[in-house]
Length: 98
Image (cartoon, rainbow, N blue to C red; front, side):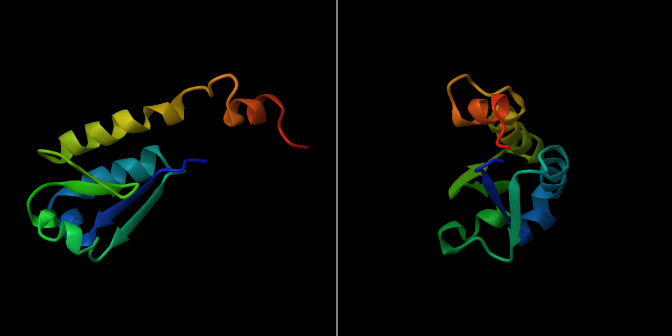
């Protein structure tokens, strides 16, 4: 299970990032994705300027929806890879709990 979380601004979805949201939901169903009416006053106004999302409390923005999706998907690639030997994920895959 991923520890990543994404928060989309409702207004930004309407203006720019709906396609990014849809692709993330489809390709990474285990990732927590939430939509809020407003993501907070710290980011006020960003929603009408560029496509963006809050990833683990940090703003990730793109020039356009495609750029935003590419940035996010590059960061998510590790979820598709096999666990690294010696990590908790690897040990639980090799010796699953009974």
